[in-house]
Length: 332
Image (cartoon, rainbow, N blue to C red; front, top):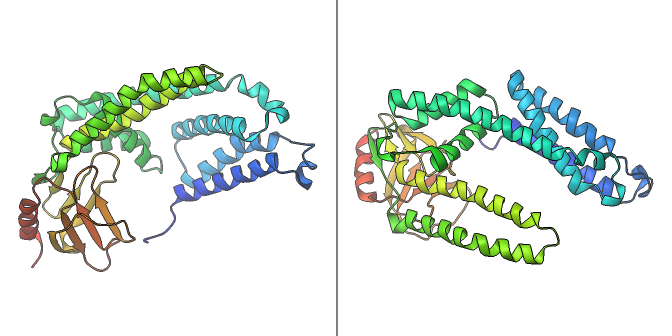
């Protein structure tokens, strides 16, 4: 049902509300904490190590491997949350735990790299067979994680890794669909993306120097560098995917792809009412989707009643050719 809250959203909401309650417990003097004199840390630790993992298990019913991975991630996030929520003067149990948080992060990173290597090897094998990168990534993720709530996130992350680091010779990739339409050249779309990446790259040493001079702790500058480089990986993936992942017309459906950040969509031709050119000034509003990036919106697809959205706006290199091709496929 449209607008229904998914289990993943419920899980995030419950965790957020619980952490908010812990924040007020540690920051606001009242009866439960003896007006600031008894800041017990064990409830937060119990939530991070027991309550949240059990909640995850009962909501998603993951496999053992997925559950252990989730437990490690939740425990690491719980330690980091405790560092931020608990005042320094109230830390006792947490001060001992913080001595091991780096080991937790490294262990999780090692596990992620292990899973990444396994999945990448499978993706390469599948790509040699078909050349269809989307199908290869989905098959690898579903083989590893099944249909769990973690699978969409894992697929998104794998696309980031693939397009950001591993993609070679994009012209050899194949995508589902009989006709493909690009959007990388529209109004300098990928050129603007590349310029933004270069600005971040040139700014990196300057920001490092400023933070190193202004911060009391030198590690802050290095942490900012790591986060900047991590962000650049996502931007590079978006830049490279925008050059090769097309909007496609298949036998029975319109396949909308737009870089890696936007969710892919498959729309049956029976749900499409009309397709026309549109003006650029389309504002955000409920019930419409805009696939724009740095390009110019030039296509409006109006959907029939009963669809989750009323209109979809696209930004394509050859809008007129797309309109003609799509109209030929719409039912009379």
